[in-house]
Image (tube, rainbow, N blue to C red; front, side, top):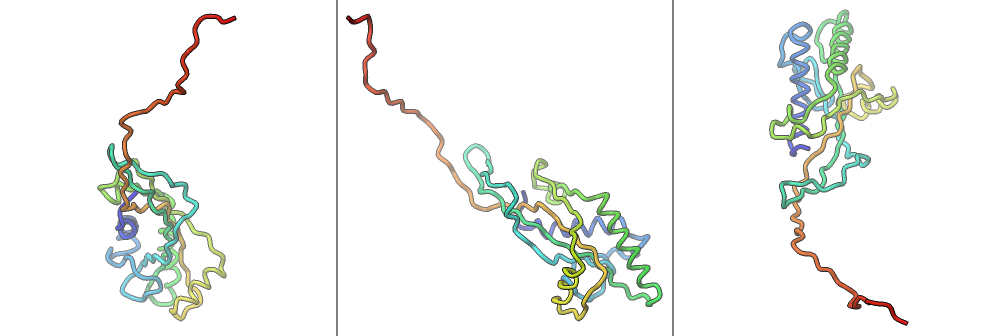
Length: 200
């Protein structure tokens, strides 16, 4: 579980992973790998776009979380993050596709080998026992991808991109409960005296 900054912190962790593995062989300037809004044009080569956030109603997390001996935190909110990786190259048209494909293939390779992220590495204050985040391919049909781009306002009906999803992202609740501790037990008897001896 993590606090409200986990989404931004996780995005920064992906950026760091990409910079560590793509620079300088494929991307000379680490600053050209960055988080940016979906479909945004700007000064970047590899864009990591968070294009959707969905609550996960199927995640089996509905128990209170113990905080010390006297307090309990309400269950966290599980969400799934959806990312898109795109290449924004200004090279000439003859080599643009090659550059794009090489970078995206390397991204797939890196994420295949580094698909699990420990919460304690992303947020130092988190518990080492907290559930890890898995970043895995999000399989969409060509029609779904075209729909995303056609509704983007970018003027493009499609573009080569990688689609991934990250889960579970468990965002801590701020609601705290202080259940009363059991200090005594009352035993109520039925009031009947035990019988002794043998009656006729």
